[in-house]
Amino acid sequence: MEYYTVIVLDGHKSAAYITKRGLEWALGAAANIQVVEKPLQAWQACATGKVDLLIVDPSEYGEEAWELLELVQKTYPSTKLLILAANNSPLARRRASHLQIKYFPKTEELSEICNSVRSLLRIIPKAEATPSSQSQASCLH
Image 1: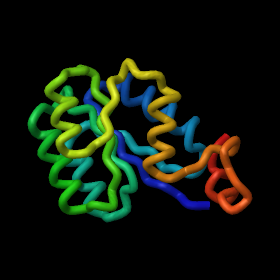
Image 2: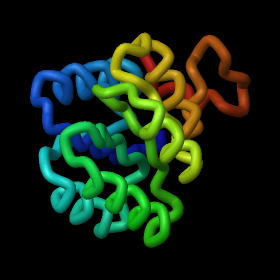
Image 3: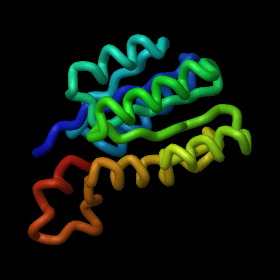
């Protein structure tokens, strides 16, 4: 079974906890999900080269979050990026689109966000698994 490292950068502790718990439910034992509160912590985690997915809520950090996303995208292109924004602004959507980063408002259904995470990490849910993909699917509940 593959093991994924997911970093969640979110300045809202309760929202970060909900995101973490939802991802733990969706990914099960296949992922190590860590929550960080500062962009520098997220960058340091990505600098290990072992982060598969970085989820960022730019609402709390403004330009610093966007700079982090661009830097990770350029420096660690194998790290997948996802924006999970508290403030669903058209400007943020445009910036995410320009950077080709998947964007979700936090008001989105958790199941949709989890499906997107599975897709980014190429994890196939059990119900959709084929015999050749069974090893990848075994990570889900």
